[in-house]
Amino acid sequence: MGLVIRHGRLIDPAHGIDGHHDLYINDGFVAALDHQPDDFTVGRVIDANGLIVCPGLIDLRARLREPGLEHKATIVSEVAAAVSAGVTTLCVPPDTDPVIDTPAMAQMLQQRAWQLGKTFIHPLGALTKNLEGHILTDMAALSEAGCVGVSNALAPVRDTVVMRRAMQYASTFELTVFLHAQDPWLQGNGCVHEGEISTRLGLPAIPEAAETVGVARDLALIETTGARCHFDQLSSARAVEMIAEAQQRGLPVTADVSAHHLHLTEHDIGFFNSQCHVIPPLRSQRDRTALCQGVKDGVIAAICSDHQPHEPDAKLAPFSESEPGISGLETLLPLVLKLVDRKLLNLSEAIAALTHKPAEVLGIDAGHLRPGSTADICVFDADHEWEFDRQKMISRGRNSPFHGWPFKGRITHVLVGGELLFESTPADGH
Image (cartoon, rainbow, N blue to C red):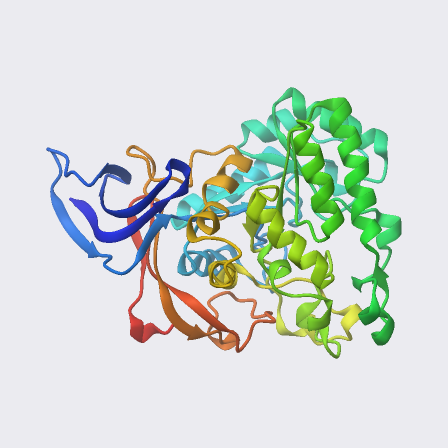
């Protein structure tokens, strides 16, 4: 029996669709747009009148904490949070415990996701063994095991020769290298942006140069190796300029930004608010403006949650000793819709940064609603207003600086592989 989503405003940026259409879904796939196929039997109808229908959201960076840190969260808890937030595909960094540096680890994560049947999980393989930055992993085997790219996560590859060889090896197998560009010596033990706030609070700082020096090194290596690379989580205006210039010169580079870097700045730290302790740090208002413009111009392809759930104690230490990171899955879409409200993006541009553009970065066939595609679909009410309450989060990690923020955008239905996995009513709140 098929499912029909009627009367919704269908936005599919990958195919330039933005209008009212009926969507027919059968056997887990999009069957047709507007016209009911001859062999289609209607089993259920979802009335999406007044709602937005779009591809399921794709998050380029979400740490699920399993295996290794189950006291913070589990795949079960975080996948449930993802589905409730309209996220149907997750990309997982390799810094689990044990590290994703063997085919067995990559397959275990995917099998776990398959058993749950709620979201698609795409792992990144480790660039170096145990993320130690010395010995390259067997990238060919990791690719065969389903890894969509390779990364050293937040661990630096200090040796430039090792990084160059890693890029050469990855390009041989057409694997994208995901880069967290930070100079480890300039970053040191810093925890906030170098500026007036770090001076006033007396906290160890991370200068903008920590990012720009890292980006410059990696761009030089990309130019000599031809490797396809993606820069994770840009945080500074100068880095955006450098990526834009590299793209204009034809280098195969893309970039993303976290949703919180598009809204928060160093000033939100206030008086040592550890919920705002993130790496890379929240930077200046000028940097935030440049990041938003980078998304608008397409220099920054995708917006991600950089989801890092923590147990409450992790944020109770003094600021510099607290663990960095925000539990971001459940605020990803609302924060992006705030950019639409502020006229920084239109709705189609916002959805593109959460759907087909991250899919292109990962090299997967997702993020669109062409007939024949997997029916991963998010339906939401873009006008529904609500207030974010940390205590109502589905994620095990409730570490978020957005408690009490007014948001728009209530998820009403989420389909993964054509199966309706989440449905809410106005009475459910957000």
